[in-house]
Image (cartoon, rainbow, N blue to C red; front, side, top):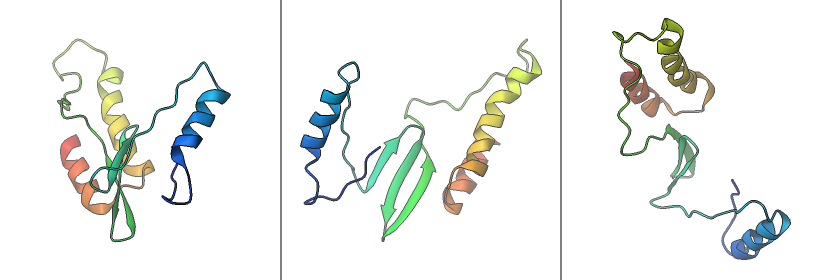
Length: 106
């Protein structure tokens, strides 16, 4: 992820340079929409000169993990929950979004 300031950086030249350095990889560019951008599994937003972080889920996400009555081992059932809980403690999620994420996990 590259953060740049408009007017100081020619992002198209930078993108071309990166793509020429490593021809086996293709770098792409996404622009901020409504003051936010999704990067990996995080939504990064700017609000009144503050950076806000939230967990990103695609619109098709169902938030369904392995059902409790399945024949999977308990370790596999808990792995998805542990992963989502780790977001709450390791990512700098803002308090408003943290409560929403906690409700989603419940």
